[in-house]
Amino acid sequence: MRLLLRGARVVDPASGVDGARDILVEGGRIADVGVSIAPGEAAATAVVELGPSLVVCPGLVDMHVHLREPGHEHKETVITGAAAAVAGGFTAVACMPNTSPVNDSASVTRFILKQAAEANLARVYPIGAVSKGSEGKELAEMADMRLAGCVAFSDDGRPVATALLMRRALEYAGMLGVPVIDHCEDRTLVGEGVMHEGLHASQLGLRGIPSAAEEVAVHRDIVLAGLTGGHAHIAHLSAAGSLGAVRAAKARGIRVTCEVTPHHFTLTDERLLAPLMYDTNLKMNPPLREASDRDALLEGIRDGTVDAIVTDHAPHHADDKSVEFDRAAFGIVGLETAVSLGLDRLVHSGLIGLGRFVELYSAGPARLLGVAGGRLGVGDPADITILAPDLPVTVSAAAFRSKSRNTPFDAWTLRGGVAATIVGGKPLYVNPDVVQVGGLGRA
Image (tube, rainbow, N blue to C red; front, side, top):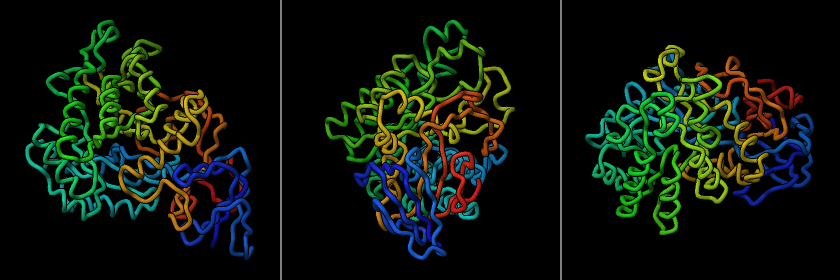
């Protein structure tokens, strides 16, 4: 069976394409991309007329999610996380190692890949732990995990504990050809903080986390990347000072990259004051920063300093959030809101065009992880996201495919959403209100 997508705008910056194109899919791969492709033998080809209001782009890749399995399946599983991913327009996700047991061995890596194969939804790329148990004491068996299928290393949820450990991790990961992804914070500065240190923390009587806690760790990692020649990737960057350090390091030729989340480029710490004070769905790490930090991130997205948009999808059971703010778990879900937030706040605001959007959500993450995807060239896997840039979307946490509902965006109305998600030539999510064609099945 072949699939022919016709009449949409194709945006594929990696291939230099932005315009009306047809795409032919055969055997799970891109068979042809052209201005007008004949369907060939009609009985063997499903023809999908999309129209110029839709955008076909390389499948979106989220390089920072928490799937919680093994060990915390009441929050999320590989299957439910992968279902949330395709509903959110992502054809692939990379999952962090802070599971129980921690993904610090080839056996855990293989288990995650087995669960992903059984789910048969979004592609899942495991990220292995830098240190055994993510305890920051000694390096995990990085080579074994790499052979088993890990695409990067991180102790996310915790920073890489010491400069020496980070140096060794960069050296070993460099030999394996993958990045070290660091959750940058100086824990002595974080202390028992629960939100950004500033005026609003004082108003709310909550302990603060200064931007310096992130900035100090970012500077450390930049120095070590320069020393080792390794690739340091800064996870969920949130502070203006951190972004400035990354921008300057790139100008000096240091191998440092960074990612930003939709909640950090959309919200600020002032949101905690209203409409619902002490809303634990606004508690995340790093915390929401000041407006000046948010604006700096937007500029970094615009000028190319930021390499990827990620969700840091962090599902939690309701019990973890239905407590006092000080005691609540850090983190929010993001797989099913990231596209709409990006289209609404980045594209429709005029900050960036669709080409840069695709670079941040697809080509950039694929390139950073060294995985297939991020382009729609002949012979490439047919991982395709179809966007509806003008679709009115009202976020409904109750309708999420994820097991968890911890989002601050419930009931938000946004402009732009996902029309369909195709992985390996198979339509795995279809919005029937946008695409109503026999060639693409319902979600």
